[in-house]
Image (cartoon, rainbow, N blue to C red; front, side, top):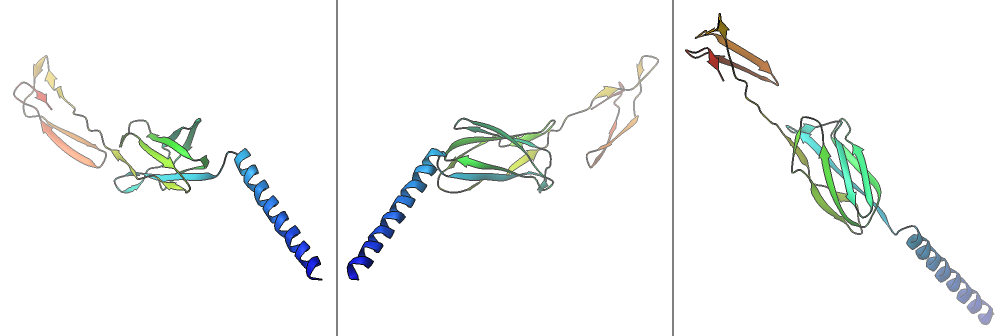
Length: 157
């Protein structure tokens, strides 16, 4: 009886080793472990939606779009080094991109922040080709209200 149970244990151990080896071989054939790379894009502390976020590297070139909370995620990413680059028309991101390394775990990328780009508006108020001084020009938009007054030549900045 001892011999019989010893053979069963050896046979069972052999099956476990064989199954384990097959699993590892299958994992290697499928490209190894795959992970998730995710992060957020923010604008003044809130999530920025509809940002195209590109992951490149290790023979990958994938785009994800941020949701209403600014979250993006790439799944099934194998181990390796990648560059993450967010893009949205009329927005400037800080930093412009980040490099991350996927190794044995999922990666949460540090936050990207939209940096507002401000422009100046200038011009001249004229009447019959002469500048009009002292004219108030009121600008509104993007949460700001600003007033400029024309100079003696009718110019404003």
